[in-house]
Amino acid sequence: MMDKKVRVRFAPSPTGGLHLGGVRTVLFNYLFAKHHGGDFIVRIEDTDQTRFVAGAEAYIFECLAWCGLTPDESPLHGGPHAPYRQSERKAMYSQYAMQLVQNGQAYYAFDTPEELDAKRKEFPNFQYNYQHRTGLRNSLMLSEAETQLLLQNGTPWVIRIKMPDNEDIRFTDMIRGDVHFNSSQSDDKVLLKADGMPTYHLAVVVDDYLMQITHAFRGEEWLPSAPVHVLLWQYLFGLQHMPQWAHLPLILKPDGNGKLSKRDGDRLGFPVFAMNWTDPRTNDFAQGFRERGFLPEAFVNMLAMLGWNDGTGQEIFSLPELIERFSMDRVHKGGAKFDFEKAKWFNQEWIKNTPVQHYSAQVKLLFEQAGILITNDTQFETVLHLVKERCIVLNDFVQQAAFFFATPQNIDIAAIKPKWDEKKNQFFLELIRAFELTTLWQHDELEKELKEMAAAHQLKPGELMLPLRIMLVGGKFGPGVFDIAGIIGREATISRITHTLQLLQA
Image: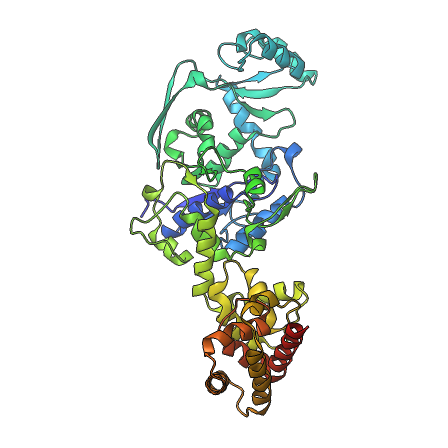
């Protein structure tokens, strides 16, 4: 166990749909916290109001609820460190920025966008840093009186961190071990804007300190920002209070070349978001794993195995099992290739091994969307159990089982015709009469009836099963043919055989 209670956080920006990489970050945070008996916090980082998207925050919480990853503290769930939206914490950030300015660790910058653009044209790889800050309009170059006059006159400003020149900055990453940077490689990041709104760099450090975060897990794309954050911790609160960091490996495109993006999903035909998302600004639509027919347990299980394993070779894990087994020392350093076929395998395994009652309501809704009304829930669950081994995603149940509840619209006559003859036609005409007289309408009785009649007609039962299946189902698929007949009943069975015989004669 840790020396103090583990507290981790997921801090998304409400700017759009939740990429599966984001959900994996949530998952690793959640598993680590619960493994150590700690707290999982969700904090909304909405300081950049220009990128704010209406509905994105609600979408994030709906995704987490679907995955079963419930926060202990959040804007939705409350908690002792409220508020949990950075825009609502705005008033508390400026004092920390001012403290840095007073200590000579940050400064006011008054440069206009036009002045900065001119510098970028003058210097191709321009960075606002120790090399260039002396030639710009900031409080390091201006006198105290000039700086105060600009502030009093309402001249637009930002506060930037003053990155030291040629200083070694180190920290220990839980995945990567000792990581170090030269401070000269980092620019003087903006910490606070004139409207009092902090940037991510200042807000994340202040909030992690005030919310007593012990461990911070984020994607490896944040590594270049680490030197700025280490210095802010050192300057403001002391490095002894800094959380332990872990920079998670990327989820890569299927070919391993670069980070997986929504465009890859669109191009290759698979979702990369947890749930359907339509951007209200552009109407750009992205399909989600939920709507594609994935069980949340399978989605979470699949994500856990993207960059982690427990060393045993086991692949199927429930959430409680993941909590029990999870450790950061088993997280890989390298990126994990996303494999949609493997994702579907996880889902198929979960469908096969989960009681149908767990997902029957969701599948029932899919049938209703296909225009098939389900009136008998007990019979419906019996059918789902019969066909579930043939289903990869929940949407497959409609194709695999619709014929139980609605007469097939199309019959694959072409699959029957090559071996069809008058002898078989006579057999099925007599089978109809036999089925009309059968007293016990159940699997064993129907099978016995067909086999006895086949023997009498000198036909092999095997060559009659395919035509019968196609008559009842419409094609060459489905569970046991007598299971089908037993469930759809005498009237539907006879009606479907009769209809197909008419088609064959026509």
